[in-house]
Length: 122
Image (cartoon, rainbow, N blue to C red; front, side, top):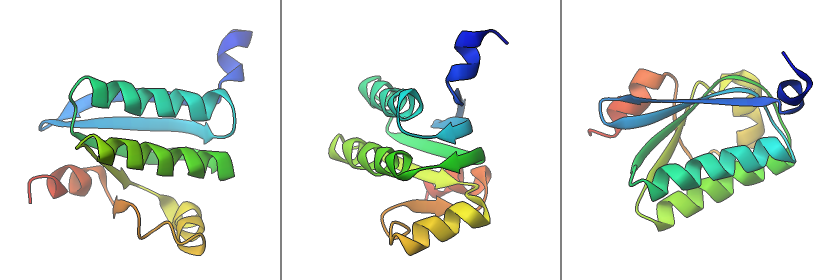
């Protein structure tokens, strides 16, 4: 891994599952390039006409307040453009953070990626 790569602590991998765009997040969602990368990713997917987006948080090791803000902002900007952003695989720690901050009510959360993908066809 070169220096450049190790600086950005968030990796985003996108794939399509049954017409739903799944973005697997790996690393940390923190103030700076990581938050920007996530915001830009969601923005570009919505711009491409992707209306069903799932963020798989399975490999998120850490999120700070800026990261939470980015998730909320991404959720709202997607919603305002007729797209839907859902979260899956939050893990106990992250679920607790969302409950404490009362953000659990904002997001559509599923335990597994399969559930999240299926929730769009209901």
